[in-house]
Length: 110
Image (cartoon, rainbow, N blue to C red; front, top):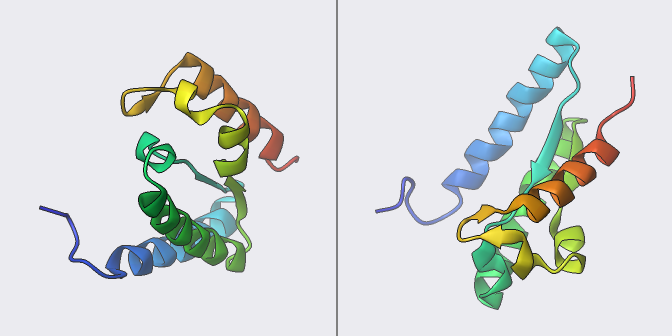
């Protein structure tokens, strides 16, 4: 069974977490980058993909509202041939390299 009931409870919790991350960023001085990653079903099921993208965009908007840096990997993964970037549920070495490069390019500079 799901960890949360159907609805937007997970979205509300995730949005509240961005507030906590923003507070930690301010007090600790460490920069935060909120990274949106996708499981392989996104590339296999268009209706699942649409819902995941909707939820992801909502979370990234919450993070941006808190002045956190954000990175949505969707377009880059799609361009890189997302189906070839996974080994079952997890990224393979090629997928990890793509994501690492994206993160390195998005990290705030000191």
